[in-house]
Length: 252
Figure (cartoon, helix red, strand yellow):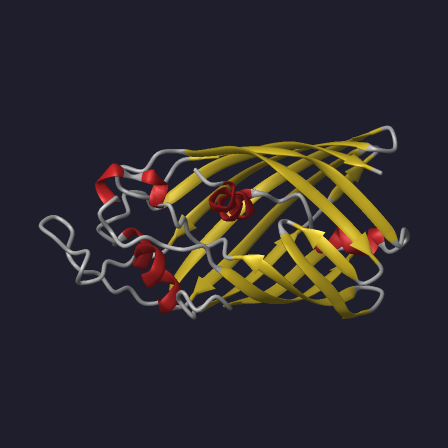
């Protein structure tokens, strides 16, 4: 599987960063970390293989710019407890490889989707809240999705535990791209399917531990569920997924 096809899947299950980190990082104008992230998640698709991979990972902040979760962006405005940012990122809603399913190999091939992302984040003693919108800029499905997320980081010495939840609404153009079946792909046992907009619900918990000044270990366990528009598709055979990721980062 191509490494660029793995990245959107990794984005969907990683939770290595939150707006809480932004408020802390401003004390250090420039930060740079590199490492590796391993993850595993079953496939939603009929006959799909489980998704697993080991990817290089980079976190970088310099003044108002950042590269994080495979997204390049800039902070446009902010205050003591909020930040407005814009970025270019992969679309993390679906799997363009359809789990490398043999049963779905005859379907039209999908291309990777890049999105323009705008996010507003608030953070404070009660945790953080994020609101964001993603819009396809590749012209492959021309759709958009909106997300609201909440997390509550707990700090204990060098440990950090962060329960987090999010709700994503993907427009019909997005869901039809990933789980729809066009007339050209329909056949016996696989009827044409044109879903409307769909929801993705995600809950999870992240655990990180700092060793010394530079070494950080990360673990995240996550559960994703989908509304009927997704799991009613004839090419989908699951309505929820459990995933786990783990990684190591070295901060310079």
